[in-house]
Structure formats: structure tokens, C-alpha cells
Image (tube, rainbow, N blue to C red):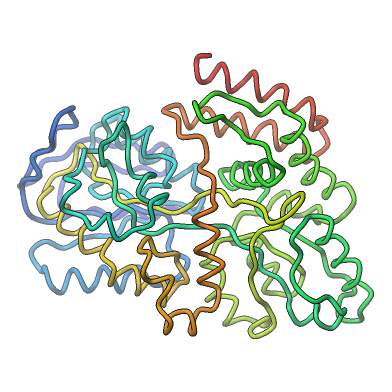
Length: 431
């Protein structure tokens, strides 16, 4: 993917996509420290906002509103690849070179501990943000060792998108609550003329962060866990094996189409919108886009199914963090308050179906009428299970992706993959 690099202010920084060579540059304002201890939050002037590629088209209008109100403190958007692993790597490379090219970072919720432990992001003044109005599981993703190191901008819970029109025509009363029901429903729909040639189910199974999410959801939805309450690996269990068996077995029996081994979020969304899939596991952002596609008015959403009943999503979303090496931190802090406000969260909900961190928005009658999936999404977020919150998250997710992928493509049995993963995770966590 070609990366377009934008500089926030004149300097000698070189941003090279092939290696992301970054050097600190001189500019007026706060110098940034990158050191432990309370941040000074001094300096005003231009800043940058660094995030994955905006596929919704709703981000720039929000930044434009800020820039109109703050013409001397403009924010410039730096878009990284859509792949979460590539985003994380480029942010880490920027931090390791102590570059001030990145100011405010949009972090996957699971990266907070890693970035805070390495002192790549500043500890934030907790009382300056309305955290008491947000869903508690969402707020917890922004903390490390009791301190606030990020602010929730959006949450995320996986949901099951399904073709309600085809289920109804096949005589199915409602969406499946279990994996067995999902497969039974697929068999009924495939007997319809409209279901001929359709695939049953897909999620995100390419070897990237999405695979970690889908693997963890399958394990949790079968009653297993990746790590226990104390953070110790606990994945080599019968329950975890049932979860991975569902995914691997579904590839083998055709429930999941073979091409889904290459799917990321956008690939799977497009497959569903084009009418190729009966069921899709994906995030809430899909809802507004699907309403503009050929399946508009034909689909609905439900909780993810599990082994014996409704499953559990991995907790997703993004938090805003402040680079320890940034300049103009007073401006950055104000921008973070603006971007994570309830008003902005509502605009992202209305424009892109992004899950808001604010509890009140899920219960607003007018919003629920306009977005009927909100009650499902709220339960998804509240029931969601965090991915392993470990400092060595990069190594942990790489191990998960490697072993899960081997099971899905038939390179290993589920049992062997989980045995190997247990050993890998213990090594990663120094246990």
C-alpha cells in the first residue's frame, strides 16, 4: 500500500515508507521530553493526528471543525495503512527515534500498556476528561498501572451481520445463538434459489491483528480464555480447543469460504455487501456502509453466536494518546478533549456507525430509533473480553496469529497449535 506522508510543520524530518526513517526536527513550542514523570503540557501551535486510513470519510470534517476554530493551532492528518500491525509498527518506529513528527496517536485499545510501559506516551490529567460518563470496560483500556495514558475516542464490539430477508424466506425465526444453529441456518438458505452459490460465514482471518481478535472470540465463546485473571497463558485447554476447532473445522467443511483466509475487515465487508455471505462477523462501522449497498434493508445484526449460546466479542476501539516526544502539548491536550467529547462521539456514531464510549448515547430513544443495532452493540461492548493486556503485546499477538493461522490452513491440528501457543506465550511473558 502506498503511504502518503504529511508534515505538520517545516522541519528536516524524513518519513520514508519503506523504513520510516524519522529524525527529530526543530520547531517552536513545547520540546517534549519522552521521560517518565508528569508531562508539562506546554506549547501551542500546529500538531498532527496519526491514525489508520479513514475508510468512512467522516474524520476530515471533524478535523476541519477544529482547524476553523483554531487557525493558529491547526491539526494535520497523517494516515497510516489500514492494517493494524503496520500502524503499530510505524508508531513504534517514530517513538524509538524520539521524533516529534507524530503528536496525537490513535491507538488500538490493546496497545495502551505497551506504549505506556515504554514511555512512548504521556500520563494524562485524569480529572480533565469526563470518564465517569463512559462505559467502564472502555475506560479501563486507557489505563496502565492505575494511571490514565489515553482517552477513549471510540469503542468496538463485534456483531453478527446476517441476511434477515433470506433467513425469513427459509423459515428461520431469528438469528442463530450457537455455532450449530448458524450452520443449520446456512443449509436451509442454500436450498433457496437466492441462496445458491452463497457462502455461509466469514470474519477476519488473514495473519494480522484481526486474526488475533477472531481467535480470541472463538476461544472465549467456547468458555475458554487466552490468559487467566492473573495474566498467565491458559490457552491449552479443552474449551479453547473447541473454539479453534470451530474455525478450523468451518474452513474444512466449507462453512467459511477458502478465500476468507485472506480477509481483513474491508474484504469481509465487501463480500457481505455484494451478497456473497449469509453471515458476517465485523465491527459496527459496517452498518452505515452496508445501508448504502445492495443489501440495504435486507440485513440485521445480532450478538455473536457461541458454542452453547451467545458468544463474547473481543473488546475493540481506539484511544487517543499523546506522544512523549511531541511539541505543542497544550494544543494537543485541548484537541484530545475536543476529539473525545460526547458531541464528537455522537457525530462519529451518526456518520460512521462507530461505537461511542459514552453510555448515555446507547440509551437515547431517538438514536436507537435511527440506529436499531445500538442495544446489541452495547451488550457486545459490556460482555466483551479484552485481548491480553501485556507489555509485550506485539510478541504475544504474533504468536497467536502464527499458531491460529497454522490451524486454519491445515498446517497443524488445533490441539498442537494450542500446545505450541501455550509455550510461546509463556516465553513471551517470561513465565
